[in-house]
Length: 115
Image (cartoon, rainbow, N blue to C red; front, side):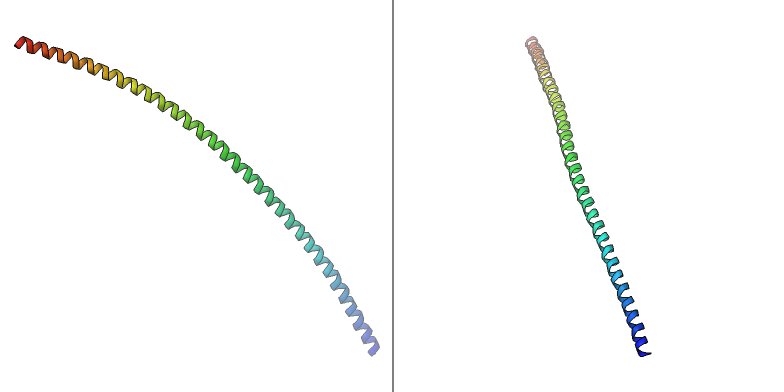
């Protein structure tokens, strides 16, 4: 009976060993799958980062172009307003000088009549 017990125990140990080997193989395969998935995710993150950098650079470039264009339009408008204001000041200054000269002539004429 001792030999039968040893054979039975040896059979059980051998069975457990085979199951552990199969489990080890299964775990190794699963870890390989997980590693592959992490590699895929890493690639997707790298791809996403490249796209974000590209989009950011494109947006920055477009915004600079638009802003420069907008500032140039504002500058042109301000230049036109400044030109109009300068012409208005020149015209108004001439009108004011004419009025000053006429008022002066009238006052001199009045003084001469009084004298």
